[in-house]
Length: 406
Image (cartoon, rainbow, N blue to C red):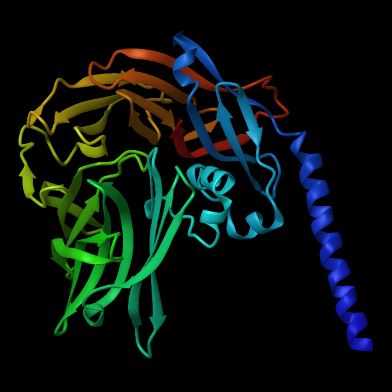
């Protein structure tokens, strides 16, 4: 009987602790300052669909506790986090919205945005399941689910990943639905004798017969050596818009050792396009750009956007995949602070380029800018500000780690 009393006492303590946590959270939330996007020029309606998410830290307190918040054109709101979310962290905005709207479908799904594809007709999901062998992962299988929004029907099934015995690891990087075919783009680590290779691989899923109809390695590179390594990056696109083309950046770096330091130097860089419909791969010629300075930041299925910081300006160079040529570059002035411009978050949607500073303090100003993605015309320019700033609440750090455009 004593052990049952001990068990009951533990349960009571846990319940009271969680209750105290919620009470403290709700009470302290009222004390958080409000952040606003102060208009400096342009039309405020341009930021109506913009949502910035991140966390706030009161640096005047010695505990440096981070509190999640969301900033829109209406101001800031602090997220009421459950005890579980405090432990495992909060999912991205897109995942939270899907969980609220499609509870049944989202049950048991990962919080990785890269595992989902959504349009007006379907919501598709793909992830990798595996069994742990004696020395490595084994028996890789794709876990696939597709929801039809018209009738609410859900198709779920698993398929074995081909040549699984040669694989060390598989990770889903993107899910695309093109011409009614579900395509999974993965990063695989494969073994060939004693050598290991990283590759970008594509698997085409036959939804009718629930099997893999085709698969191939798009790019394969050897594991890094002591003084050299090759990275291949899949450029991000909107998970809510089908992209017929995949864009990859292949970067070769060499380790350079000085007397006091060791650094990596880019010695070669290539941009590759892969067409999901035709299965054709081609090299993109951007020889007119200094690739050691420009970074491919976004792709909207017709235009690639190269961006680099030039002093206190963000220099944007569009490249048309349709015309196969570089467009006219344009500059976006940034606030910065003492000739230092901190990290910027960027995204492109509906022909508009959205820019927001990823960091803000009482000394560092934060940008929020909307520009025409073709001409660079500034449609809105604003600044993140702490409303009612005073000496008491002027010690803080604000980090933005997610930008979403509805």
